[in-house]
Length: 124
Image 1: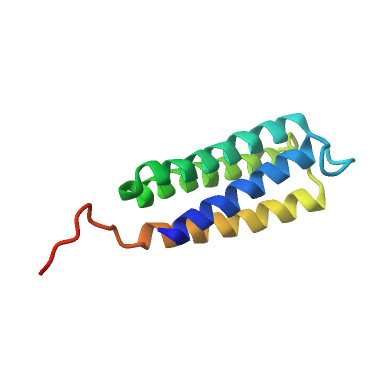
Image 2: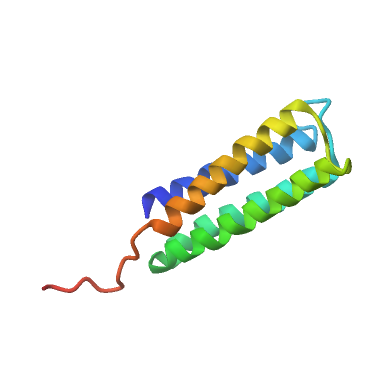
């Protein structure tokens, strides 16, 4: 459960940081409003999922899988927009997308393979 929460925190804050770069807050010269908006949504979903794991810890795995799958899909859409020339095509953007795709795919794999904790531990 802790590993899933740490993944969601890392991924969510990564997307928020990328959004802040695209909004020109953390770095100048990489502004792209639509990319920043998409990254804000993905980051928000991942961080909301993190919060939900504390509300319903028995569903941590399912929440983690759903949020990371959403983020992975959104990132693939971002790569598609780069490929067709709509999204930003800078070296940092391409590097970030490659890195976050790896993190999301690995995180999704680890989360999906995590054991499901029963609601009540049995004494056998």
